[in-house]
Image (cartoon, rainbow, N blue to C red; front, side, top):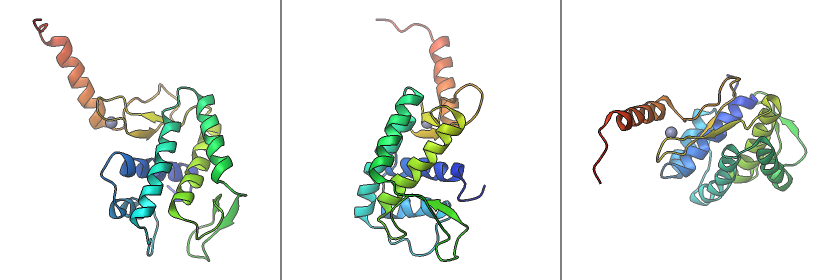
Length: 181
Ligand SMILES: [Zn+2]
């Protein structure tokens, strides 16, 4: 997948939300996710960036947890109004493929870049698919966000691991004798 495709940017947003909200977040773990998604060079990401990115992640996660497409659109509009600027094309001085940025400059803080670029990617996917572009895992104790762009029945779990765990738990509930009391 082209690293700057809308879907790749949305996948990066979801992975960052998981690293920031569902795992003990650190500058190292967040940098690792960024590198996995094609960021190169010295990322210069500090603990203050992680704290600010966590606030952005919570808002992005809320979009994927929206009950209706209209609710998701409202949330995204609020984020875009607050953080996005006029779209501009950049190749970062010829070091990357051309892609669109909606933040205010190439040197903005990580959290501003994260919120603006992720909100933009989710907005485009919402418009493309006319649905909330993902969800929150229904497995007990999980709640991780995931992307869901398929045309079929909506996904409910973040991973096959969570789906299997829930299926096993449901099976056990059905086959075990009623507990006394
Ligand atoms: Zn899960």
